[in-house]
Length: 137
Image 1 (tube, rainbow, N blue to C red):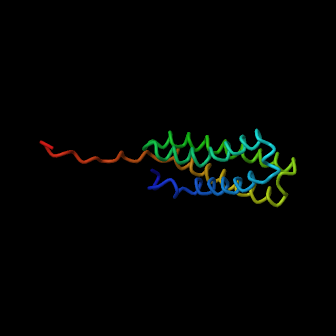
Image 2 (image 1 turned 180 degrees about the horizontal axis):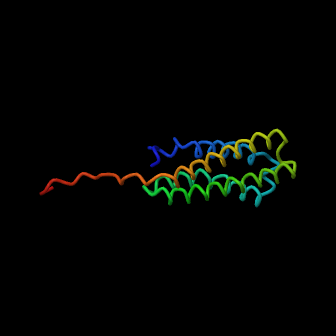
Image 3 (image 1 turned 90 degrees about the vertical axis):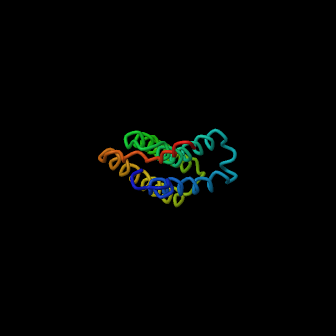
């Protein structure tokens, strides 16, 4: 799909995954552990983006359907960014943590937007060709 054999090749997925890894490093900190609901919300949001990009890629060969999954991922990246601002305001992360993860989130959002534009402006690739079984097998 879109020239990608594996979803791990998609820049939007790579950046979303990197953001997830950085957030995972935050949520194991003792200050975060006391904020159960907040940690669950942040964790769900940050995991949603790479998951949706991977799922959209693996679903098949329809660009518009894949683009819808990427839109959902982009929304989750925005939600993650909002949670990171909340974490900073609650003194759970430093200004440096915020700036680094905010920059990464914005790069992931931009890459997702670019992928959506590409998917919506190009025709669907042809479906995979399957070999027919020889008669009698």
